[in-house]
Length: 338
Image (cartoon, rainbow, N blue to C red; front, side, top):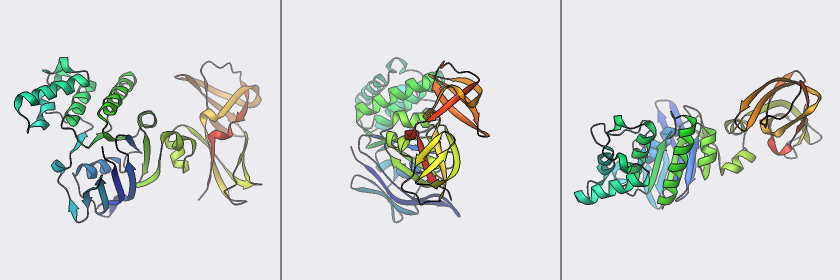
């Protein structure tokens, strides 16, 4: 097991900076999620770590070994890093077992075949060893690709949007199965996603990216409870945003004040309030606009003080046409406005 350390990495395409001074550490044997919107630089990070592209500045190391710098790029095949691409990139003319065995060319044939079967068994697909990719479901192809990446005992595994394109039930099942396999293998893992739920539930650490820069590097719970910016708060779940100013050390919202001892008096601010931080009870303060099922919660839209707010309440909470609203300060964050 080895840490992957990214320091001040920059990658440019012409005049465009895909990555601009990116730094973070993927801890040995842990799962790190790179979370961000399309174009934030997530997949570029994976390509640089895998050795598919050079860096323009900065460095990438695995343990004590330098993989990339402007003066040095270790070839991809020498890095011992497994990659599972978004489209899985299985060889269509090879069976599942042959796909897994492909990266074990240095072993004797019988040992190579047995190792491939063992890895297919670990991902629950030994019975499909003789199937070709077109005969496998999307989830099965993903598991074959994971087994192929893990079979050569890499130092790290990179997953590019590993659960995209799957229905919600299969997505959750595959995510849990993948994490179990990686945990058992004790492999340092980075996975790219634009889905906050996947990142929060699957990762030991989050790195949030936007426009080629790191917004925050933190454990999932810390990032959710103490976002470094309005953008981070919005990336991790539904929020309401209220503009105001700091008065007497606090920012006022229609539903209560949030203390801001770290901001100067009179400073313009934006208050981010998580949807679940608003509590509804029968009353008269706000008007209920709509109630929609949202899994274990209901997503309620309310109108108050001329604005619309989103609230997550426990499912089937009795609500009338009008409600009172209270604010849990633990789910409210104040950021100084530009």
